Length: 499
Image 1 (cartoon, rainbow, N blue to C red):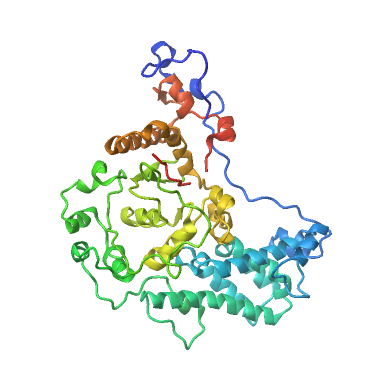
Image 2 (image 1 turned 45 degrees about the horizontal axis):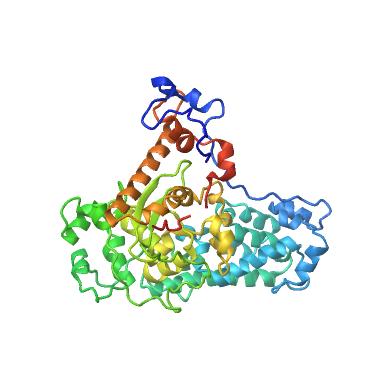
């Protein structure tokens, strides 16, 4: 955003512009309107007409197969740790796409291949490669499906392996068995958490192994009441399935939460007492402890991305921001300790009546591991992604399956909305650090509330809107020029705002 001008030509705070007259939309914005940050667009690749696989590249709409490359590309193929076997037609770009698929299969959990626990894309590819009527046309039709195209890593691997899949029945069998292993892993996991009946070992049906309709079939584990779970001794642990049956699957209401905790109406929304400010999102579910501490064998993070550390004064705040065109703060959590990968998913589970399809967090790879161990239902239903800034900057042990760029539905989504909102908070650190707890919470809530008003103003502004912002505030914070956005208004997600 632009800074304040050197002259005193703008009205002071609390005054109207133009000697008492309100500013009109056209006066404020001119002909350009409100600037909006550029949406993400996948990089375009040039197609080489001389590439030997150009026909298949057109058949599967895969530019990597039309990349003839150069001497550096040829050298890269020879240096691959896992090169394609001799006789497999490929280019340097297509070989790297296959390697990305292999890495994602080895490194990341099975849930990345089934957003929302929907295995239709994997099932479709499996049925195609093992079909007796397999042809180039049938494989091309499967690759063009919307659910397969959504998973860029899977689609890219199938398209780049197409030259070999079309000529080798053995590779089709091996690839199909690999996909079957992914789905069987899901069945084994569900059996492990007692979330569904064991998979039928006498059939190779992908539909049965991937859970059929995708609905939970329940379990025989005894249901613990909400009141009993709340009143239990702090040292008494509960299994993930007990928590799911008690709080997640039944209908969640704020009244039931307050009754279970013995709280008067509205007490749970007192942000000075709880440190949680989430207007319109009252607590619906309790978050008890679970069996087992974080270890290397459970949900201890193994990625080298570094979390925010507790400062000398407070742990800071954690903000939940939507990814709309003009992002709004959904809630703020004042931390009483260092930030943890569990905090973002616990906020969603505790406050959202309907779980979101996607949750973006800078340490989502570790959050997914935590959810698989402690909140299995959430791990299957909510797709966890790392924001683009932190993915490109500091994630080294994750595969591209955790990147939002690997999913078509994430194109154009602003994954850095939280950092944009936190940018102003960072500028206040020098005096916020000296505040007492109540003053710090009130200041944080006030700051986010004002920013929400600005966001709503941008959402609803029209040519008939009268603008009553003080002129200096409107120019610095409410109306943002396109050049200002391009030159630094966008900040990259969910780092704690330390105080």
